[in-house]
Image 1 (cartoon, rainbow, N blue to C red):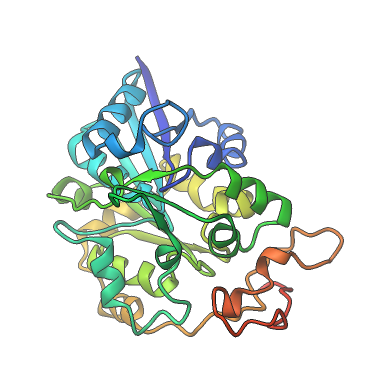
Image 2 (tube, rainbow, N blue to C red; image 1 turned 60 degrees about the vertical axis):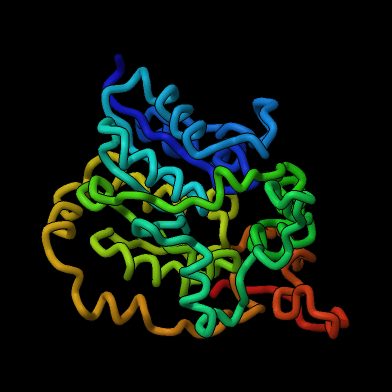
Length: 314
């Protein structure tokens, strides 16, 4: 049995491919990394309508079997699956969320969306744009919505390719309520904010931090999928945590009550995002990407295509 590894858990509609640009940066620092393909995401042939949370947790058990200890990184909805697994698996040593769903017991993400409805000028992310199977057990993300909301700060080609790789998502592994968070609260936790996220707006990310205090917090100036748009920025935040360099700091954070100022920050309404911002500077020719051009009025009937190009770094 090997000593330690890092498990990367992808978000809804995605797969292990979402981590392709991050994995080499982590392995270059000596980390043993496993990018997990969850059941039903298109890689294993399972019908997504039949996938359950228990099946996902069993799969993570199998992935971790060769290792004595594991750190887990959950992106977006993968944060809930990572949380559920960390709650039951004693091998988990650390837990990191990348714009992830970090929720207390018996609380759904839809309830957090409702709590922050008046604070999110960019709306409820991808939710209104989903298409559903007749029985509403499986959802899909239209490519145009994925490019504008998930991959808004990626180069055009990257956004198109990533949106084409999204697969149908069963709600059995998405609409999750945790039954307990006792072990999670005792683990070193890191929450990495994606400050320009249009899928999990910053107000939502900070509300979840207020509901689950005790995590270290870092930020990257990216959209929803920094592992694709700015993998080095993300790696720079993850590596000190995953290598144990921040364990003592994390222990102090767990022992001390969450400062009132931190809670106030997490509950403070966030200013609307500037639709001309959120670029990380990937376009070497300086031209604008069409997938970011209509962020201000995406999906609105009045859009005439003149809502302004993207550009610059916020």
